[in-house]
Structure formats: C-alpha cells, structure tokens
Image 1 (cartoon, rainbow, N blue to C red):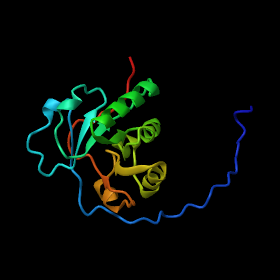
Image 2: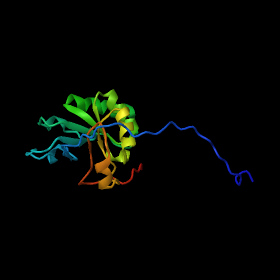
Image 3: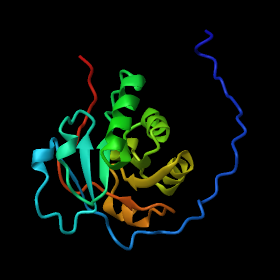
Image 4: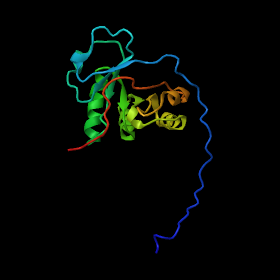
Length: 175
C-alpha cells in the first residue's frame, strides 16, 4: 500500500541559463594515441599531441617537441600508485593528462598536469562542457555518441573535439 501511494517531491532547482561561452573551434587539434613508444611515427607533421597510456614503460625514448599526454585509466584501483606514475611522466616532459572520470581530474591536478577531458565523460551539450570547464578541464573530447550537428552547435570556452577514428572502449570491466 505504501508503494502504491503517489509521492511527489517539490525540489527548488536553480534557474538554468545558457552558458555564456565563446566557441573556439577554428583549428581542430589532431592527437595520436599509441600503446607503446615504438608506435610513434617519425613524421609528426600536423600532429598536435601524443597520448601514451599510463602503463607505458619506455618513456625515455620519446624525443619530440610535440605535447605529450598521459592517459589515466578509467578504472582507478590505487590513487597513490597512479599519482606516483603521473609524477614520473611529468619528469619525462608530459604536460597533460587524458581524464576519463572525475577521480582522474583530481589526480591530474595533484600532479600539476593540464586536464584533457576524455570522450568517456559523455559531454553532449554546452551545459556539461561548462561543468567540466569549472572542474578544470582545459580541453574537451566530446562523447562518441554525440550527433555531428549537435557537436557543431556545442559551445565552450575551451577547445573541444571529437574522436574521429580509432579504437573506442565500450565498457569497463574488472576481473
């Protein structure tokens, strides 16, 4: 009988207004993601950044002036271990971290790395983009599920982009 009763909760929500932002998408950035440093091509013309997974071991072999971005795994089992690795990556010249969840934002900030919000943050509108900006994202990769027309209309004070090619992790499993 208790479940059958209709329950209405009146919640006072703050007024929702369109974020005042400037679209800064004149030049699209091109990043490459590698699994190991041997995959980095010799010719990097037109490449704006190289994304390397946190598990990569041969960091000392990377010789480039192109910004290096460490990919923080979405499944964080030990924040202490990841923070330690991020500090090691910073010593090898990495300037940014690709963050696929909010916990990664905190770790990137602690390691003093620029935050690049990954597509797994599921950003599909200007409101969500503004929220990530407020949390410290300096660049945003939009959700893989966003329609191209919606991506074109989305505005942000930070550079935004899409994943146009490559492997897309669909689910996160442990064990």
